[in-house]
Image (tube, rainbow, N blue to C red; front, side, top):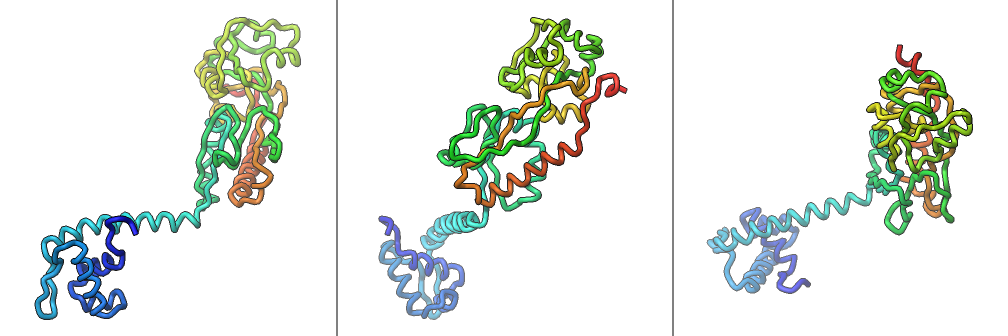
Length: 310
């Protein structure tokens, strides 16, 4: 027993008497005899050192101390009831701790989470984003969506999709610089993403080895920052259609040279093999696989800006 705490049965009996107004009705509520109620109340009065009820014939009247004590206990009983309800309900709730590369989380994952919530209302999802891989299991994380990293030992790795990385810019930037040919790249500022799986020199070596890259430009450590800069007309960016899909669909970005890109595998979903049968992992893997397939089925190759700007 907690030190200074009266027996819980005494407190339950006292609350029942305060609620019903008589020992007899409290006995009925508690499914005990009236004498048992009387015994518990006397025990509580002895512990408190003061009377709680004035007994008159077959009725009882609470003292002022009893009313004040009941009010204080009522708040405590309410907190106990709320805590009990919360912990009792947690057994029926599945929790998924998810970690993701920041740009994919911002540009692709979060806008689609309503679909996951609709399909799986029984799963409470917690999402963290960061460049460094999550410590699966140790920090409570079950799934990590990683960018351009090897699959850790003891883990399963699911390739989300093949990404096409290509030059992208705002329609106004393309019009301002009259970008129509690959050779025009040499005269415009470029946007660099330091973590991109495909860099500008790689793209140039593949598609335009005779072109000299401009030295002017900006550099970002997150794809979504670079894409925002490109959307605002600050330069020509090399990025995947997966991460830029929303801006391409909205017409905020276009591909000035059409679908001229480099295909790469960059994003993988990773989880521990020992966790593969967890229902929340199975649910999320099935959902994201379908979402990626729907994206591929519904997407069209980016067109040149002269088509997109019509």
